[in-house]
Image 1: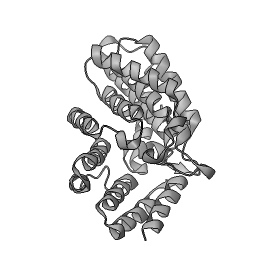
Image 2: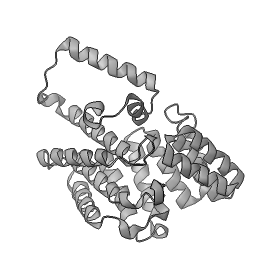
Image 3: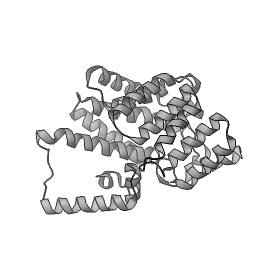
Image 4: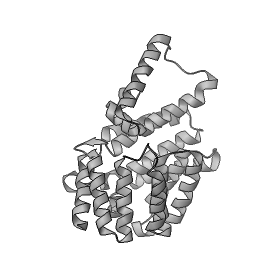
Length: 283
């Protein structure tokens, strides 16, 4: 589905699922063989299977959006055609299922994240981190729509991961400046989110929030536990977050080494340039 809707490569799909490319290639091959052998027709799923099928659909849209927002490889940081298509399909699902809280939560998350897209790149497509973005260029219309969606979903539906992620995005988007971000609220939301699903990326973001509330050492202690998780151990984001927290702690040498390690691990050229630039300035 990721290939058909998003036109993604096997390597990009593997990166989205935090598995090796060879593992994902085998999964795709087995899935194709199973479809051919069973002759499963396309059509609405029976009621007992609907919730699970919907969960898969939402996950696919989430991954397509993420690949569009931060491309895992190539010369460009973003692929707007993917984020636009993911939002279009999420709006369609929301129209069909207006009362589903997680559908609304996913659409809200996409809108609240997409609202920052114009501010994420500088001259030549260089990466601009969230704390340094010009917030006046954020799309207020998308932010208002996203906040309204997630607020209604949280008030009327059972709590779910997409609603919580949208709530976190809303806290970021509603802060007038980076310094005024309500990090204690974000940390609390990540705590609830981590309790709902075992996801190393959630715990990675939780470490950042912990550092912003309790200091960099608190975040680094959480990263030590993540280093043993095979799903994230070799990922550039783990090294990048470690570098950021070491820089916060005042360890310029350790931060520079970690930034260089993160740069070696990513296939995104804008991310490589940003991470190498951080290492060079610290050195």
